[in-house]
Length: 466
Ligand code: GLU
Image 1 (cartoon, rainbow, N blue to C red):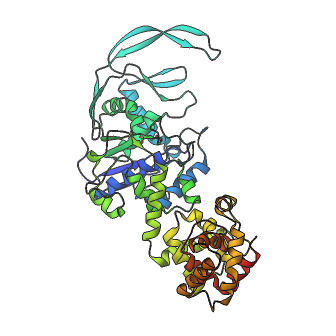
Image 2: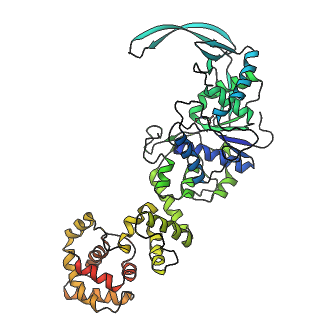
């Protein structure tokens, strides 16, 4: 096996669709293993299928990898000694290897395509097949009795599989096919470890046949488990909610949180921590610890990770991100600054409470404008317990008497006095007051909101509440 010398892993996406968490997790595991071993991580673009590739999808791959902090040592934009790193630019290389296979008698032409010839006894079988119009027919096809190949998989153990039919190397339209380009580039780019999704396991025996035919030692294989939907029913697909990396980017998730979450899709840290810095993951990450069992995607767990990371952020870093989210939501203007004491006091409250930066506008509009919305659901709940407008009206005289909104004890006294006068409990005033001044049913501590709004804005809001 060619695992002598420095480790070289690669991520080899085909830009034929949006970049989803399955691809990101494969990239991440390759990256982690290269960083763990002090090796190199290569990005190679498998874009030979011209009809299905798009530059837009490619841009999303670069963008998402960068956003996740998965940097490549060789590949597009980085160069390296084994380029070019886009397969569409490597036809010369494929021709060379194809010629090698041809001279050793391992290729033949049929129906315009170039096929790989398996070694082994040949026989024919009858096979049923369906035409496009649904009619069934019989055909005679050739099968090969090839010796089984043994895959030493670092995760799945030894897997033995025999190929029984030749496969296409170059398609009838002249484009080199997946098996050829994938194997040739892993050889030419000196890849030592192929870490890819378990769905590729069925290709690996074909690939080992090609390595053998080319007289090259195969790399080490590690097939990582699939990612299932939360209910375990079926594989996560690009259409499932939460599947696309760019979605998290657009929703202002923290890339470190998403990356940490992805690390745990098929791998568990030895020390039992789930939330841990990437440097610790790099130290611990071994391929033989990757699970055989399929992973499950749990959207709530991802959201929980994101919230934990938000809370743990240093306040100035949080303030930067929060302010840019507020700016995008149109709540502050471009020259709003994190140095502003008023803004700072709001952001400190939000950092504790915010599930995600995507919720920042919903949770804080009332701090920035008088035009904040009143949640109809909250009103309905409050109304079941009494008339919130009446409660707020009752509070108004005592609140008018307050010198400011800075003194929590004085505020509590004003509420208690009012409650006593109307034979009610102080607690019956909190929710209506919160609703009147914020439009919401929950949020930071009421005293904190009052202090930040100040007396004048509080009284105006209470007075016009109806
Ligand atoms: N282009 C293939 C894919 O996107 C790469 C498979 C591999 O990693 O070998 O699935």
